[in-house]
Each structure stands twice: as C-alpha cells, then as structure tokens.
Image 1 (cartoon, rainbow, N blue to C red):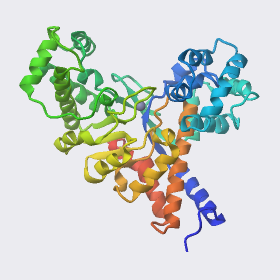
Image 2: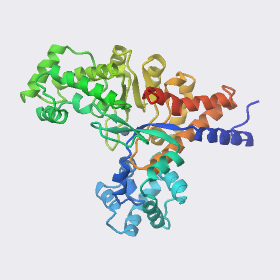
Image 3: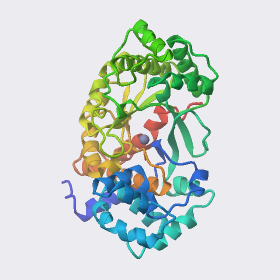
Length: 431
Ligand SMILES: [Zn+2]
C-alpha cells in the first residue's frame, strides 16, 4: 500500500530522493548573476539585497514607498536605523518565495537561521567576509552543484566560461523605436544598414557569429511590452516601415506600423536563430516589478510563430506563468517547445509544485527544464536552486507513493530536467 504523506517512510523517501536530486549537477537555464568582479566591487549587506527587483517588488506591493525602499537599501546609512524601518515590512513579506531563497542562502551559506534585529548586523558582516575572489565558484559549483549558468545579456560579452554560458538578446534588433537605435547598431556591429534587407542580413551575421562563439542561444523579451501575437507579415510592407523609420517618419514601436515591423523582425530573428542552430528563449510569463500588465504573459498567442518554425527550439522561460496550463499544452503538442521553470519556484513555490505534478503526467519529460535562477546575487541563486530541488523531491516522492514510478525512474526524471534537457537545448555538449 502507498505510505501516507506524513509517515516515517514518506519522510525517509523524501529525504533519500532529495539527496539524490541534490547530487545531480544542475544547469541553471536563466541567470542575471552579476560578474564576480562587479559583485566584489559593490558593498552588499543584508538589507541592500532587498533592492533586487524581486524582493523590492514584494516590499512595494506590501506598501513600502519607493523612497523608503531606496533608504533601506542605502548602505551608506546606519544599518540599525534602516532595520527599524524595514522590520514591519519584513514581517509582511518573509513568507514569499523571493524572501525564502534569501533566507536559505543566509542559513546554509552564512550560518544565520533568520534575518532578525539581532542577526542583521552579524549577517551583513558575514556577507562582506565571504565575498572574496573565487567565492562564485565555491558557492555555485561546490555548494549549489550548478555546472553552468546561462547568463542573460544584451550584446555578447565575455563571461567566465568555467561557470557561465552567454545568452545574448536580439531585443535591440527586433524592438525598433528610433533611427538613432539603428545607427547605434551600425556603430556597434561595424555594419551599414540602409534598408530592411541590410538589417536582416546583419541579424543573420550576428546569429552565425554568436553560434561560432558558443552561446547558449538567443533571447527575446517582447512580452514586457505586448501580447505575443506575432503574425507573418509582408516583407514589402515591413521594408516600407523600416525606410520610414530611417527617414525619421515613424510613429513608434507601439503604433500599428511599429507592430508590423516588430512582427516581421521577430519572425526573421527566429528564422536566423534556427538557421544558426541556436535555441530561442522567450521571456514568457509575468513581468518583473510592480504595476506590470499581464497581456504578454499568455503563451497561447505564440502559436502562429511556433507553427511556422517547426525546426527551431523554443524555450519558454517562466513557462507562461501564471498561464502554465497554456504553456503545458504547447509543450505537450509542439515538438519545438520546451517548458522552462526558471523563476517560478520563487514566484510561487507551491504553485510550481502543482504544475510540475500536472506536467509530469501531461508533457514528455524531455521538454521540462527544472531550474533558472533569474537573480543577481549568488546567495539568492543558491537558495532558489535548493527550492527547485525541494519541489522536484516533493512531487516525485508523492508520485512514487502513488506507484506512478519507481525511485530510480524518479531520479532519471530529475536528472533530465536539471541537467540533460538543458544540456541538449543549449548545445552544452556540442563538440
Ligand atoms: Zn530574467
């Protein structure tokens, strides 16, 4: 008979599975980690970490003003006074996933079981002490067991390839707002762009160059400003809009002409990326910050694009959160769509579990990417990675109890999601 969830057997099963999952090297599919040198050059204390967009958004949603948030995060002001003003808000947000990943980092990496009046000072001192050259390798490799982190960036820049893989964006090529933007691209890429065909040829060249440079793929972030309802557009009409833009006669990205041009360029970016055998990662889900619209979160409007590029690999980063079931239908029915759980273990730790439970009986297991931190500080990245592993262990242990799969099959599923699937999708094991 299956054991009950709270029985000693269930606890032992969870613990054993959790340990096995922890031993699987993880590929971190979506990161914004600061370069280590930049982090070392920044004064960070226990409160300034809350200036990151995610905990900051929780604090703002809990009622903190932007001015108070800025003061709380100002490391030049006395810590004690900042704590006094922070504490009432901390009690409101301490249970959220964004806070939890920090608390796990504080506990496991620095030895402080919580952030309190009596720990905020020593914890800040410990944060300063552990941030020494080489601490990224120690935290990411040795403590978090992260083999490599796919790091988001605008244009391609150098990263420490021992720890990171670059994921440059094609945003500046596809979201055109002014002629000056095109001129900046010309300067940065030593190109001459006199018409849309020149611009598209440059996108091709850039994708081929990035492929040669061994990037993980390309990133597009259109969902921060629009619905993902790209449609195939007429090349002549798009070329006319582009010429108007170069002449300064353009009504902007949000205008009907701007939409037409953007649709055309997103299609061309996907074609060029697929031609270069590069995975296309879309930001696909809720927006960071406060007061964001939800119209870009739904992945269903992507279907014409997904139908058009059947040879491409589409990585839906955040899997359409909160429209995870829409994303799951795409992952289930489109061979070219992968569901990426980046960020969602900390947006909603419990919600991520529920959806993972559904996906595992709905979507082929090669389509699921378990983890992407979407964060900037290693302490939070560490905590987030633990939460992702906790979620997989909970869900898989429950399925073992329900006799859906064996423990060794469960470990195989976790290995695929944490390592093998992203290794394949980002061509990590390419010769
Ligand atoms: Zn991100």
